[in-house]
Amino acid sequence: MNYKKIVLAYSGGLDTSIMISWLKENYKDCEVIAVTGDVGQDKSELEGLEEKAKKTGASKLYILDLKEELVNDYIVPTIKAGATYENVYLLGTPFSRPLIAQKLVEIAKKEGADAICHGCTGKGNDQVRFELGVKNFAPDMPVIAPWRIWELKSREDEIEYAQKHNIPLPITKETNYSKDKNIWHLSHEGLDLENPENEPKYDEILELGVTPQKAPDKVEKIEIDFEKGIPTALNGKKMKVLNLIIELNKMGGKNGIGIIDMVENRLVGMKSRGVYETPGGTIIYKAHELLETICLDKETMHYKQGVADKFGELLYDAHWHTPLREALSAFIDSTQKTVTGKVKLNLYKGNIINAGISSPYSLYSEQTASFGEDNDYNQQDAEGFINLYSLPTKVKAKKNILITNL
Image (cartoon, rainbow, N blue to C red; front, side):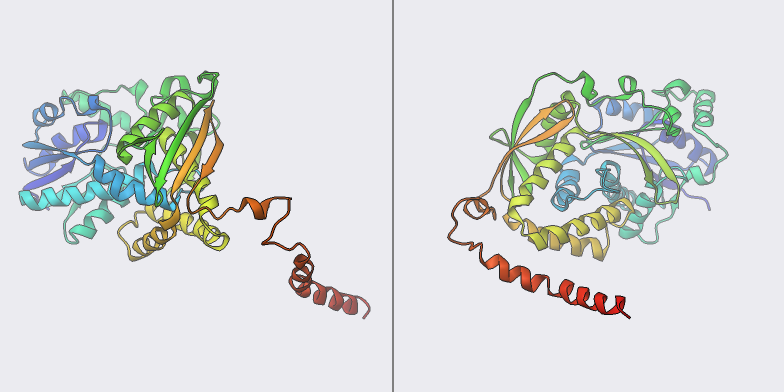
């Protein structure tokens, strides 16, 4: 198949830096239009990107500011869900993929492109996330995945290809960690991390913060306000969720919070080890969880925990644009109607310590929970309750006596 115009998801990193040249070599000098999504990566990653893309053969580069959309349309719904993957991972990378895929399709349609290309490897989750996103918005759009078809077999091969074609790279073979950064997190994979026996070289790889050992020996007190499950203020100051995440990333990073070293089960079947930095997100999740303990009734809270697991799995497994995810979001939004209030936290050397929760919709009754006199709870009623509650146990025990005597 010969494509005349290809839209490339372009980050300027190792993979996509060489793909413009590779595409033009393999598709008869096709036009390559590069698209970069600004999802909160370092400004240094965006500086000089247009010059670099054009110098290596792109006809133009779109840089799209997607930070607000990423936060409001993907991160906020997931915060409200309290969703994680395998009870640990706060889904930093999966957040951005369906959004970027949507924008790639929009640019492809605008430019009249006949294919979309991404730089994901054939071993990773992101290839599935990008391509399901593309199929959702353009079901018949061809997708090119060079990692699945080209002659290069490793990141070392890519570096050699770049050197032969005079393509500048920000890394070397010695610093070749695979990283993904956005407004929510930073991930690290590869090199020594590929062996789970190796302790991460935290002093070398951490960028958003420090280890708990190097955090200040002093408690930092903070207060987060929520309205219907959405964080709206920090230390009494109203702000957009985007800005709140930025501020909490600084606070959390400084206090050694949000560092995760995990081996996860990838969508494609293998286990993968990575180190994730999510300082602000970790604080928000903890505050939201604490607020829900007083705002949600037992049955809703327990059922929602299962929904959160499924929600996280759907996002991780590239099923954001599905009827089930949308239905779960509708359920979650219903549960968040009363999740409004304030959460006080103490940040200290990697720990997030509850320092007080309040809400106008709190279901907690100090009078009822107290050991003192209570007009709403007659302790004598407990005897009748226990008699009825234990009836199945009592009947089963009597039956066991008969069986034993046979």
